[in-house]
Image 1 (tube, rainbow, N blue to C red):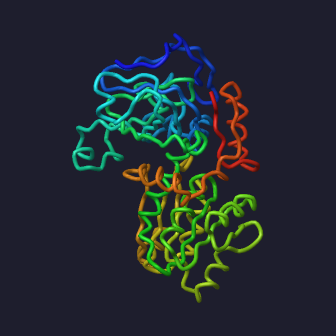
Image 2 (cartoon, rainbow, N blue to C red; image 1 turned 30 degrees about the vertical axis):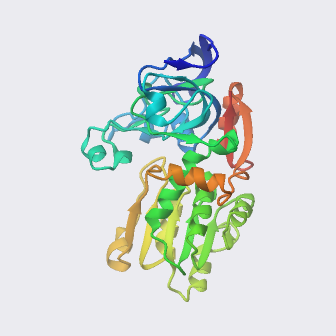
Amino acid sequence: MMTGPELPRTMLAVVCHGPYDYRLEELPVPQAEPGEVVIQVQACGICASDIKCYTGAPLFWGDDHREPYVDTPVIAGHEFTGRVVALGEGAAEKYGLQIGAIAIAEQIVPCWNCRYCKDGKYWLCQVHHIFGFQKVVQGGMAEYMKFPGNSLIHKVPNRISPAQAAVVEPLACSIHAVQRGEIEFGDVVVIAGAGTLGLGMIGAARLKNPGKLIAVDLIDQRLEAAKNLGADLGLNPTQTDVVEQVLEMTDGYGCDVYIEATGHPSAVEQGLRMIRKAGTFVEFSVMREPVTVDWTIIGDTKELNIHGAHLGPYAYPLAIDYIDRGLIDVSQVVTHQLPLEKYLDAFEMVQQGTNSIKVQLVP
């Protein structure tokens, strides 16, 4: 095993025990076994899914129709970056890493043995271990964290700041969602939601050169950020009938591509009304609870192409490159950084969502 300066024996970490039961605890610093990597965390973002988990959403804690997804106690966090401080046997060669390098890992740790993994669709792994939700893959809201041997690890150039490096994970998800939209030249594209993920989608969709790129959000500050990232127009549903406006702009046909990234059921219905016949609807959001819509619109009325989007497969190198070259400016996405000890304040800030976009914890 290769290590840098001697590591402390213990560290602070935000540990999930249950809904509204997250605790700052002192735990042993993880050790790098063969094929594993340990980083000193420099920043860890708080995702909307973290807040849904924190507030007890059935998707994470189970209900009459599903088993709990979260395995507690577990260190939370899956949007992380850090400096390599320990390399298990073989890890340096496998990942091209050295002590002191900046590294991130994709949020899923695949089993590499199931049908999906063997078919190259590792992000759909049947076992489906995601950092920060199961004990076997502890998350990044800690001073140190370990990447298990099955991880997908990427080196990040030192010139990318920790704040921006910790946005690689959500940006990779955004890029994948845009890829699922199959945008063509001249398309009218609507992205509902201008949070971290929606803004990443705006930046990625701009690179596809659509005919018109429209952002929809309830907060004007986020719509301004969307314009800075390439949106031609920002629409606020509290100030205008966005469906009517998009229909007027398209001679009554509707948008060609609609990507839902709000996590709110009303945005799904909005998209079904707004999109043209034979258009492409991309559903990305992690909904708090099941959403019901009129499926006749999807089939008999409009014959829509419905595409789901999950995680950021094969998009991490793209996200790192686009940030590094300034093709997608994520600097305005990170609005707040708080110390690890202020995790409850940070959760509250994300939950309110009115004065922040991406909130990160900095150990």
